[in-house]
Image 1 (cartoon, rainbow, N blue to C red):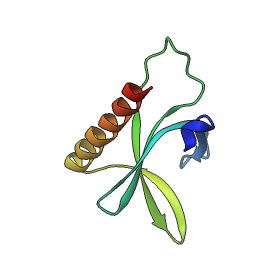
Image 2: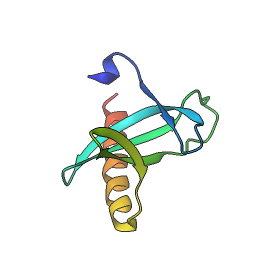
Image 3: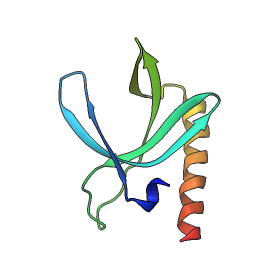
Image 4: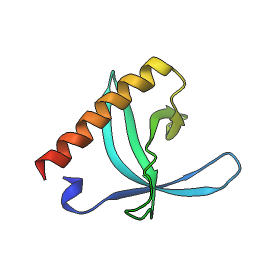
Length: 92
């Protein structure tokens, strides 16, 4: 659906108040949690993509994104998201 209309972008703010614009490559539901694969917005084709995977957590009724601390959880989610992204590329 979203790919029909272009990329999704989000802006996040870190603890120091610095804003970052990120492009959402994929969203995944896994074990009742939501995960997002993101890259910094505005990267050129020739630049290396460093994909970050963030976990959406509800805190005080607000959705926040956080790094995944558990190595096994990160590896499982990374594999699922990468499989999903490569499947999308093969379909195009």
